[in-house]
Image (cartoon, rainbow, N blue to C red; front, side, top):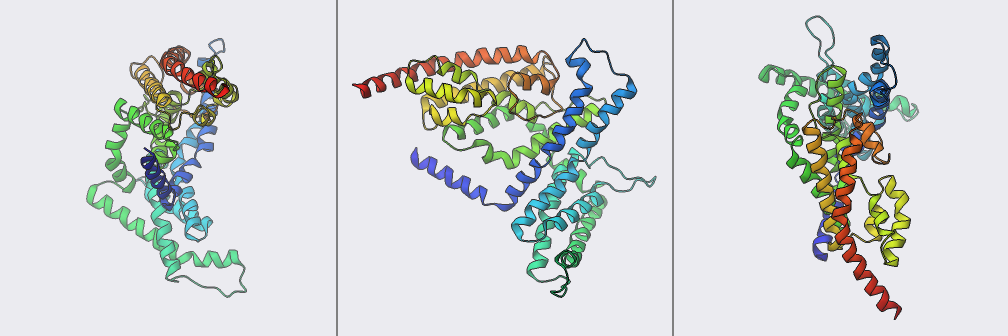
Length: 410
């Protein structure tokens, strides 16, 4: 087992050293403030639903409130194109600002072509273009880095200020990036009948369909918590792939709400945290154990657990390297995933089109994310199931620790 854990740790370290994966993960995280800001306006527009005693907004007031929500979610692709290129440029030693700007312009060029009426088509500037933004951000920076390595740039005298010098240095590499993707976009349109973002969306559509399945959701929860049981941050392992997916699904749901359509995705950022971030019942149970160790961990871990911080439990109980505690950790997360997914699929719980900081205590996070009072009912079932799953394992572990503490005292 120890060799297996060491192998996983080495694998994790190798993943952390892959620059483009880190650039994607960090770049996509830059959209969180934008999505949270948009979600705030969506919640304001939903106040008559959340608080039935409030009067309904008039159509004009409702439209004014939801406009920032529509705009913020409608430009996440642009933000991703800039932020991914910005982060990746830092790893390549080239100007992050110019790399981000060139990536942004290139993205708009291929994702927002002119219509026959002479207007820009912005359908791919939001969630539908996120993966295109990532690809342009990474490949565009690699092209610019290649030109920098080969010294294929306009060099200015040393007396020229750096800001001016960097501007001239970015001209040739920037042209190469723009021309490359523009030609690629024209070829895609000619051969497949779709521009580059549309072709990428078509290629990735099986992944999005799979992400909406119960099996995929449970597998994600199992992998994350299986790694946690081994002392490895599970979300960091798959976050580079998972974050773009769940944020894209969340933004697609937001776009559907803004268009007055049914939300397409069950699996969103909020659902993942609803099913996988409920910890505060566990330290409460520990505080009622007889073992001094578990009671002390329960007291220390309670406040962090209320705000969905699990490390004091995972490493204090400990759950890491402890099969007796790892089993309920994985089981209760799978139970939560099954419960929330089924409740959403059958229409008992609303899908989510917003995302807030996961540190908001449950069940209030669930209620805000879904704008559905039935979230409290689903959470109550989740809490009861969590108690029943953890109780026998915690009792057995408590007995083990009591015997060790008694032997140590003697």
